[in-house]
Image (cartoon, rainbow over all chains, first blue to last red; front, side, top):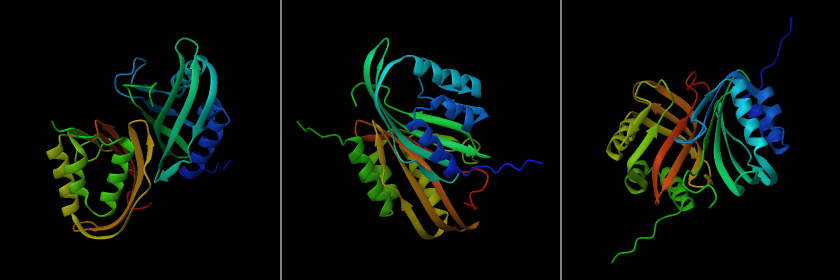
Length: 132
Length: 132
């Protein structure tokens, strides 16, 4: 009988940071996200505030990545763990295929259950993504 | 004509941390919160997931503070600012009047607009607040 050891929230957080820093965003979803993942953006975003399900969240990330012409830089701050949640600041400097270069930064919060990410939520400025 | 300089998100974050560390939680609401503040807890909490308005949020905090018999310790981590949001880890060790001693930790996220906190959201373990 296989006994799989579930990762702690700290271990998931470390692995998430490491994979994002290496640009393995899609692999990260495959490996660390629960099938029931719920992903929340800011209210009012054109592509929908709430998305559920691993395949949908994977496709959303893939679409975003595909819209990028060039990654100039990015930073993922050391995750801070509190109970079964962790938070991190994500910073990007990217040129999009259809809307030029943007500097973005956001707070990300993740909830971990049974060694998998079950909720993620992103917080950012809706008024001036370009002017941070 | 009075020209009031609005605090930046970093300044609000620093002041929030400083006031919380000094136990000035209610003064903090009075001084830093917008009248339109929206406060979000975890889905399923008995006292309501969303609360709006400064007076209601003030009363919610006051009720919580009034329910505490003794504060043993608490920590407010250095706020991390991203755009017009900031995040911090809050840790408490308190004895409640009606349910004994609890260690709690949570991720808090705040949104700042025009120098005031307009949104706050707290993330914590709903399954085992006592066992962190």
